[in-house]
Length: 467
Image 1: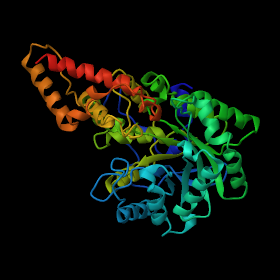
Image 2 (image 1 turned 90 degrees about the vertical axis):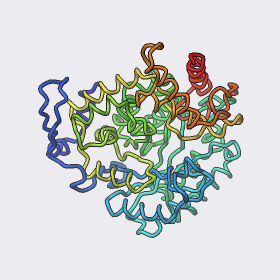
Image 3 (image 1 turned 45 degrees about the vertical axis):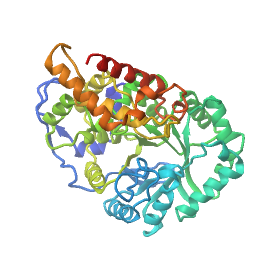
């Protein structure tokens, strides 16, 4: 599917009511554009699930970064208690402003997300929202039929409901040091009969839609869709990573990732609704290099940079909802504004974003989304913090560059090294990695973590030797 075909997937009625009037003279012009719809001045955009008729908000609430007492999120501070009062307030605001899809998992917030989500949602009529949760049987201790069934039953208990609207096989396509992707998939879902059991629960009405979320080996993705074609298993929806960087360049950022255009197209041509995760690529598309931010602001001065990514993710008509893990009320309000209503990306804007993506992919960033699945490191490294500081230094143009004899270079070098020590304590930096590779199999982005840590350590050591 090329970019023109992508734009054809925009709903015709939506395009007619949200035309972007461009004052640009040509594709290279970055004159501010004029909108005939103002973000946040209308009602939430909804998509209809063709399988059930569910009217689903295009913005889905990802419950993986719930606020915790003392500040921060349950993903960053998993040992802290969830701030239930704040969760309740945010869920109330979301429902009041049209958000009705809430996505959680037994694995989120160290197992606390479902409980907090259940408390917040149970205060509202059950038919006013849709619950999505997952069969997150990652640990070998949960692979038995009994353990996996217990996980599902516990989800119902924690969420205070008698049925799950959207149940996913969590993160298909992964692998471990011991098992390849097919062996792991079979161990989690086939050998124990749990997939067939979930189908039985769907037939009994305890699951309304059965699907999967995909990370990793595309062969597993293709296999499940082949099963769908053959009638072996019917998938009501699937959750994929989609954003304007992954659309064409996922495999260039990481050889084991799959371009979003392929993932989306394979679902859309089968009529399988797509649920989107990582619309901001772990926040990366909200923290772009300064020169790119400037160009976006020149086009739409009052539009936050992240809004471009959210609009892109919601544009194709086969998208059911776009998930955002929102910790603070301000994030929720901004995202509600973005989709009230959605302004679909125009063909000219799509071309602009593809150029931006080309520039981003040339930057030597690590595609880390700070999910913390790689943690804890047995040797004490703070892997996400190392990658975050390195990436931020690149996107904010703070890497030492230019003539190494120049004063400006040495000042930038000094600031980089001091900043590294302030952000990542010395004993937790990349030079302490021994390459045990216990982290890499857990990475949803399939980052070769030891290799990237070595690359960063080599760079840091070069800077130190220049002093």
